[in-house]
Figure: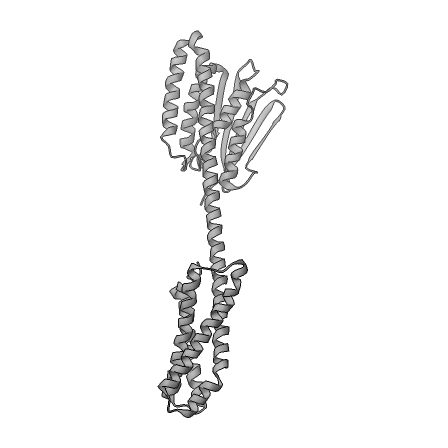
Length: 346
């Protein structure tokens, strides 16, 4: 992680190389200003710049594999100081050996040794601290990416679990209906099994991560209603009022079926006459607005398991959009209404 602060060619390496060139030019100009020959001044600046770049590279190699923590954080200061001392000594004695006849230059090397060491140490400490800050920011960014990835995986896992729960929930209800018809109406029971098989085959083959047009979703709903009508016969009446614009809009697959199942279960429970369920779909701005109504008797106790269909849809919407205001429900004057708003993805 630490080495990333130095290894990005378009950022840190460019800055370090640029600093080395500026250092070379600045050192050479200052030495020449004090009467040092250009050749000697450029040699001094070149060696000093190479020592600086080499020190940064060594620090990079060290801290790329080990970042001191806790009681060892003192190494963050000691290592640059020691490394800069070695570099300053190397610079002084190398130039004294190369230009042994330059008495004035040798005096400058001796008199300014501690100044050069201090400058080199300060710069390398700053580079070390800067690299650590960059490393921490990169670690934080990667940590956030991992958390987001884990969150997405968690959401997808929960969505999959909800879908897997809906299938058995619907299947158990249908099998109970088949069981009720086996003895009294075996032909209808056989018909229901065949329709159930066609419905499940069609839904299993679908990719549940894809959105589909409302028109296609309604085809599956009609297959589901054909199954329910075998059980309830003429008592069950479902009316669709869908605008042409709404038919082309998209929604997550099998999002409406639990609502219809809930309406049928709780609308027909305790009712003796015919039951009409109305499903409307319109476009409102960037939303597909679905509204379902069914009669119900508030005085009749609800069947066991009430709320699974609605709660599963509500949870699924929250996982998809991060909002809890997309589903509204309530009963008034013997009519239960569910309104569902589905934002359209751009």
